[in-house]
Amino acid sequence: SSIAVLVRTNAQSVPVCEALAAAGVPYRVRGDGGFLQQPEVRDAIAVLRRAAASTPVRSSVADIDELMAVSGGTEERRANVEELIRLVHEYDGLEPGGNAAGFQAWLNSTVKAESPDTAGDAVEVATFHRAKGLEWSTVFVAGLEKGLVPIGHATTPAAEAEERRLLYVALTRARESLTCTWAERRTFGGASIPRTASPYLESIELTI
Image (tube, rainbow, N blue to C red; front, side):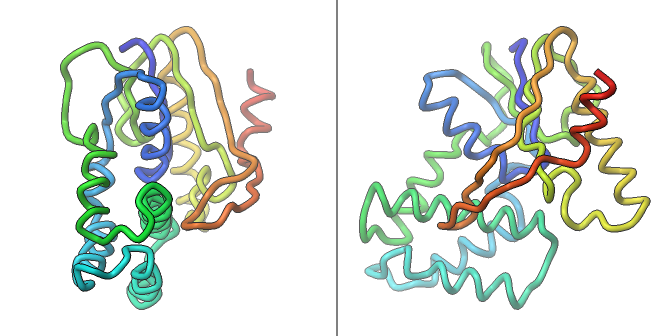
């Protein structure tokens, strides 16, 4: 409970939690309502449910993309849906030809720790927003990449100032040890995309 992993978006918390679970490390999520509760994720899952029971879940991914194209939305919403698509591909790798019902059962099991659980000794996984007012001895700030920090839709001076404030909140949650990381490649949907470091990293390094 003295360790936290902080991320900018709910979608980023899912692979972090998967990695912790695979390593046998207990964790709990302080997300903004939980990944599965995000409106765009619920809408995408509803698209999957409408498919015939015998339809492989991977074949419905195109319908999800079409849904996002019609509804539009921010990069953060797109990231949430792309994380769901990544999970579809992960499930299909485990259960080739698996249907939507099987995927949903697997999904609920995979992200079960998204439900509120404050008991026990566990690593905290939280978004920058939900970390406000909290402190841990050791903090890992993950995903410091352009497009996430600052978030892609922060295009005005006011929005960028808010992104800097959120990052400041995340960085100052550590009492003793702070580690900042970013990925050279990240999987969005089924594709592996090269990434670049957040432009804010340089100022962090200069300050520290």
